[in-house]
Image (tube, rainbow, N blue to C red):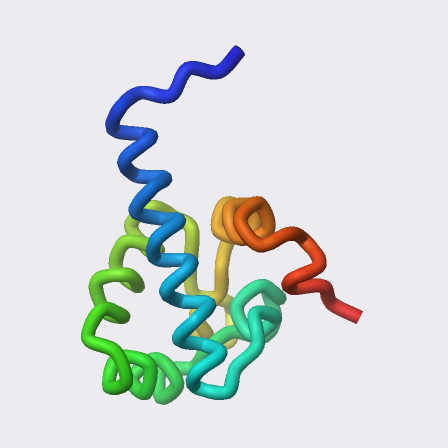
Length: 101
């Protein structure tokens, strides 16, 4: 049985909130979840700037995603979710929400 500490629970709540906000913002900006869930895809710096311009909450969420290691930069220098980020996202929305063909 796993026992979450208050700080772990708070961090997961922040991560889940950021992932939820990210999913909604991606949709509003014409992206799909696969943009950040497929390791070789990701968001380039211009796309991230557009997200930040569209929503002032994006920059703090991006910071939380990166510092918690739920997101990282791939070899092409694009922002993608890590295994942790994908696991939380799929837990929240169902794995089918971001299936890759």
